[in-house]
Length: 463
Picture 1 (cartoon, rainbow, N blue to C red):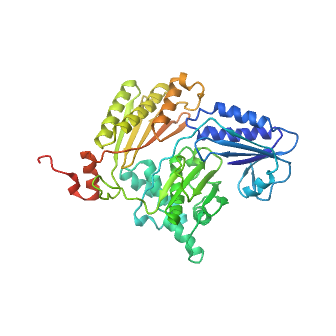
Picture 2: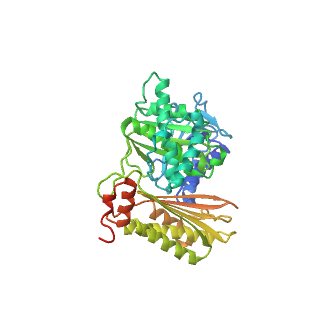
């Protein structure tokens, strides 16, 4: 993320708010940013001057963000590089290399900020052929239809949105080929162009920020899903899956990192395409063709299995013990290994405890559990006014029960997400990649049933 602003006040203060606002929206847990906020404030205080420009770049493609601050004489920015945000603050959209050249002789300083973000979880998802002829003008409607269809199979929200986005990748690929003399995309720059051309016809305002043979960055000013997408970050999986499925078709593998998202409250979206995956925990990995899920006997299952459980529980601590028991039994039944069972059980009980202890209004809360062949996805939904998950400090987290719970959840599962709105409740979203004992009878039976191979089910109960 890149911002340029005047070295004078109030522009520096506006730039600081953009940086710290981004940290608060993406940190895990969200409230653990106060120390980072102070470092940003001190760094920018050192560059306040009567004239000049400041370029602040926040590199958060790894776990810890790096803030790079540079200064340069105050002169006009290169044409079409700035989108004015007000108060002489710009968010760079294009020609970042030109701006880098402009600031190359200025003073530079780097700061490692003491905050982290949740890991991403791969949910690469194959889709039936009939979903792959999607015109861009029908994309939003097709996503909605696919979500309903996938939900009917017991798919989790991440699986459903991933399937919805991947459903359009073939159409976007063909559209690019048809518009470029039959030539298919062959590098990251062309993948970015194919994505932008397709997605913008569906109602988006995507643009290319950087592009090379193996890496590209695209931005977006308008989500085709409309303003209702704010607070629904799971919908970003549809965009990532479309982009990732396109990119993986070039070299077989690709990583997509979503650095900014309108759905979480950012002013725009930003996605990084990397055709040379490095196994980043903060990017989503896609493969083409998608690897086949095998059962314990090495036979292919069609799409694995899913077990879904929905609960509405009373807001008291007795319900937490019941929830832990049900989750423990469910995971054991499908063959999840002991360590994963303990992690998921403890994480969901911490999420439920936050709802019971720190929210109010209604007398009940809801829990949805979806187990697939690779993932456990859990959503704990407060039906009342919501609890404030952001308002605690990292420094005091170990002395605060709520802070300890949020930090513990982040340590136990692969991804923790929050959606909280005053008077509209809170959703705590937990995702954990599972490991299984493939000799477990229930897992073998369920995989075999979906693969159509009854031989894998083993001997019957009567021998």
